[in-house]
Length: 207
Image 1: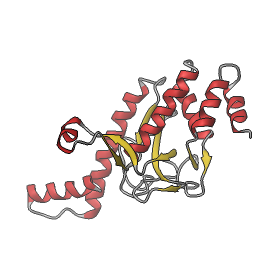
Image 2: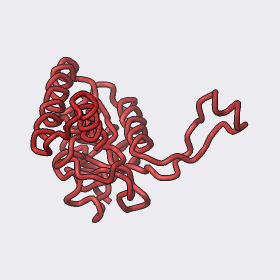
Image 3: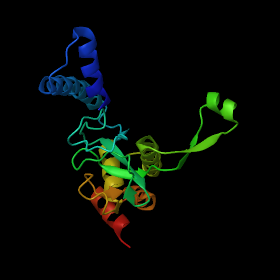
């Protein structure tokens, strides 16, 4: 939304004219297509690294609207929405084919940058956003990797998505329809040391 608005403003500043909406959409689509292609080539160089991106906080459908870089689709890329309890946070972006999973993203205690801590005397403050949810997933991925250092980025993604809790608010709005479940993800990662990935995930989901 911001890029769309700024392109229109820049065009008017330079030419003094309003940019036709159809032409503006073509320009914005072309701009993002270039970004996606360049970033995709970079991510392709690191197939064993798991990349975790926040889905954005514009309350928009990322299947329809651009969001960079979370709309890039690869087996080792996860796009994360924000949960408020068992519900999608009101500000969180979603996308049936472009957002993978969700994690807690409302009222998360966050360390304050030193410059602000000195001014306020506070070391932590509650913060909300998909930028809070994505680190939750990154932390869980790192803990899973500690369980089994041989797991690839794509395998970690499968564990995180397939062991999550199915939530009605996410079904049809994320690729997995799930919010991450730390206990089951860690169990599956541990089991992969002895079992095939599919079997490890199946057993982790068992009561």
